[in-house]
Length: 110
Image (tube, rainbow, N blue to C red; front, top):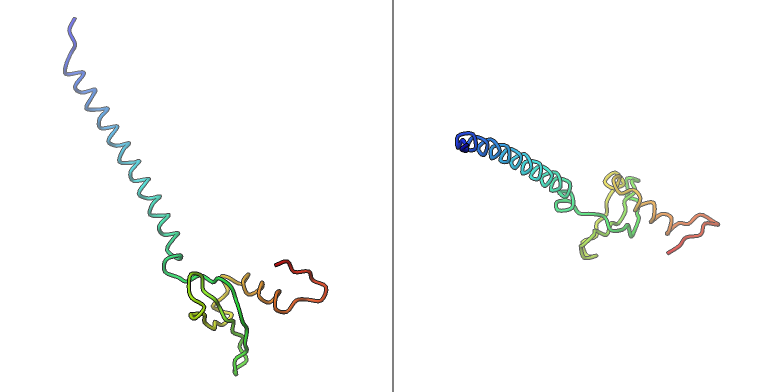
């Protein structure tokens, strides 16, 4: 009783193709997940983030502007921004207003 080498050879070729297919599918999934992660991190690299709001003024035209301190920047680079530009981080404006102009009877923790 001898081993049929043709059958053994075809078996290894088939399993090797399956392993390669699985490997490529896995590598595609890994590459896709890395791509998604990089895309989600783009705003952190290309857009400045608001650290805190440190001032408020009203322009001659009557619009409100807030002095914004940017995260990871020197206070020298703080800028006056209109409210429309701060909509994604409106919570920082709300915190500033609550600390600067507290309602009577409100208790504010630092």
